[in-house]
Length: 365
Image (cartoon, rainbow, N blue to C red; front, side):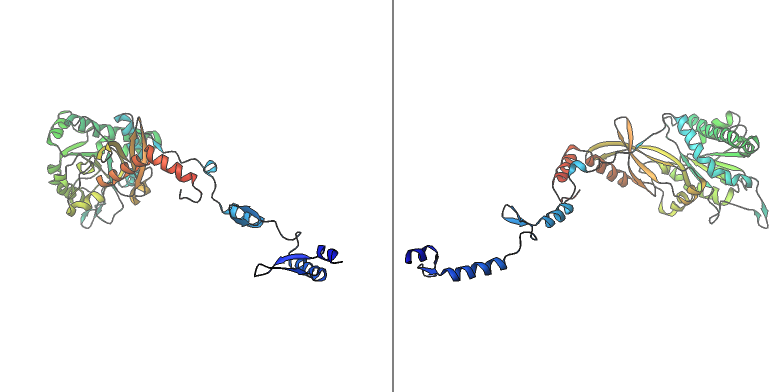
């Protein structure tokens, strides 16, 4: 009897290390209470054990959704924008004229000066609609003959393009005879006069002589004024010229690193640049970098509002890649920062660092 009872007893260790027996009836009651306190296996998910921590199935789903996508599924990096540049001066002139025409056409109806009680109206005064336009084309030949030829080529191309678009009547408004060409260089003035005047018989004047005229009407082109000529340019545009539109071709202050004195900054700002392609070079921390500044305005409204961006291009092998854009003409410091950032972004070390960051979940992209 004692042996049978001992087989149906459970041996437990008490707090002092001794053993005591539990009768079968007490054992049955304890087992019943234990079974009612445990949760049912049908309603409880089995915990998933992983290196010392557990996670329920629903929690695993939420955590998986919160994880960042793997680098394999990330979209490829954006390709740099390759910009086509003129292959020759003739091509640059064609593009410049294409940008100049929408700016000129709204003013051609006012080609003739209109008399007022004070004499002649002057559309170039401040507060009037923008009618001063800049064209900046790179030149390798800096001779007087090259300056005369470039001015004549732009005027002839403008007439030909307008005739192609709108017919002969519209082209007559921009005929060479309606232009006054003002050269800042005296040797260019003498050369143009020796050839019989301006393109197609237009008037040719030196800058100082032009400022001494009582007035100048019609279309006006000022060719290659220097920074030292800016006071005369201001006098010519504000006090002498009374025509509908003026073009300033290749002013010196458009060149890299050249700025106008602060008291004449308004003269440069009053000229809306419709086309500019100027190669440039920067000697930075990563070595010499070549590039260009490009601006093309294809509508007169954009020219008046200054809406077209100045694009910063970096030369990579045989291509020009856009590495920046600004609402104003970039300064030397702007070019240097854009070139250095572009060179650093394309370096092997930077690409390796970006690749490694992409392998780390939750890392910054």
